[in-house]
Amino acid sequence: MKKTIAIVTAWVASLFIVLTVVVTAILYHGVYEESVKTTMFEELDILSYLYETGNDITTIGGKNGRLTVIRPDGSVEYDSLASTDEMENHSERKEVKDALLMGRGSDERMSNTLSTKQIYEAVLLSDGNVLRLSKNASTVIAFFSMIAGPVVSLVIILLIFVVFIAAKASDYIVAPINALNLDNPDENNVYDEISPLLLKIARQKNEVREEIADKERTRREFEFIISTLSEGLVVLGRGGKILSLNKSAALLLKEDLEDNKPFLAYLKSTEAKDVVLSALEGKDGETSFKVFSKIVELSAYSSGSGGAVVLMRDITEKSERERMRKEFTANVSHELKTPITTIMGFSELLENPEIERSKVTDFAHEINKEALRLRDIVGDIIELSSLDEGYKGESEEIDVKTAVDNEIKKLEHKAQENEVRMENNVPSSIYILGWQKIFSEVVSNLLDNAIRYNKKGGFVRVEANESDGKTVITFRDNGIGIPDESLERIFERFYRVDKSRSRESGGTGLGLSIVKNGVERMGGEVRVESKINEGSVFTLSFPSNP
Figure 1 (cartoon, rainbow, N blue to C red):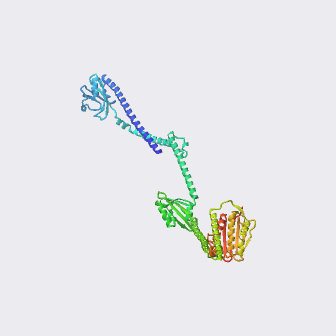
Figure 2: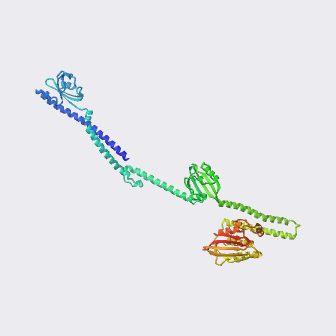
Figure 3: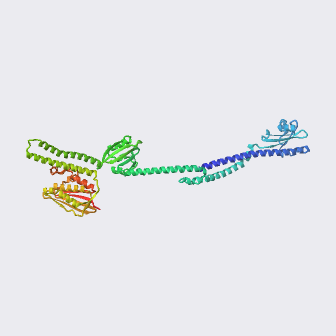
């Protein structure tokens, strides 16, 4: 801009300088010619006076211009610059004709003899001759040629001055523009012509600032949302390159995902790769695959522009629950089928009128036993369902010693039948926070199992203490113990270490599942240690009651 202003200013100034010189020269040339004519008019009057008074004017004829004496017939009597013998007749010359007719004449023309522009003034003398005076008068072009040197020098000097002034002027004009504060356009004090532009810039700047703020707010909200998702989210661009992702995606794949890297390089599953490739080509899909011990469900959706959005979820627990549900359903069906079949079988036998009375009593006893077993299974299933759904109600402070005493009294008859001694060594100062009903079920199942799988003359001992901010309750027995290979599975529903003995003793296979779910529902955890023929120790840990 600065350069353009300087160039335009210099060109305009130069044009005006040249035009001024030309017009001035033309005007000056006109004034010059009028001055020459006036001078010639006066000189001719003096020369004619001298001629009339008898003076010899030939002695001064060539000093003030070209002097010519022409006879009335047009022949040249005298010429101060040329030989009269070589000169043509002048009777047809305009200034001569006018002088002969009107006493005075004048004319301007190019001289054939001297090849220059001549100004002629003629006057009629008393003897009939015409006295003519002529002088050279430069043409405009000749005049320009004459003054060309000084004029060109002057123009060059003026042009240099103009360029300098133009450069300074452009600096002066541009300086306020260069000093504009575009961060705050409305605070500038500059040319009035620029004010509308600055106001428009200010409005657009505010609009852009608001738009950037909105997009930044949207971006932060989006990043916050995807960062809090437990699901892994990956946005892919063309070629499957990662545009955006959250931490959950990296955690699920056990990989350090990087932006602008192909996502397919991080997938080990062929099925997962195929689904992502299909999404990049415009076809949605989903699959599941294993990542170490986890099962990950992957859903890929086409973005419609050569990219895709990939959503991953950890469905390990869901799959495990589904497996357990199917297994539980199968086990329930199997466990219920056995007592029902037994009851139906003995009922059919009782329909026989010829059956012996002693047999009727035995059959009725078996039916009652299986009905009780059926009741216990249904009761345990209901209890487990209640725990799975989440126990509702206000938690309360539980006196552990009292709760254990109550369950020991309920099972005292069964313990005597099995010749098992039960001991409650819990201090009276031990309390936990939870639900009395759930804790009673936990204690009852642990005591019942300890009696059921004990030896004649065995014992069951309950102890408790507080340590490191936890309340620890132990159920110790010296029964038959649990094999090492079964320790990890004894809390599974319907799992039995010794199925034949468990059924004979009336076990449902759900007791330890109720124990585990109940303890965890109350915020605790359960561990087991056991040795074959030496006994088992079940340890419950709860947060200490504040």
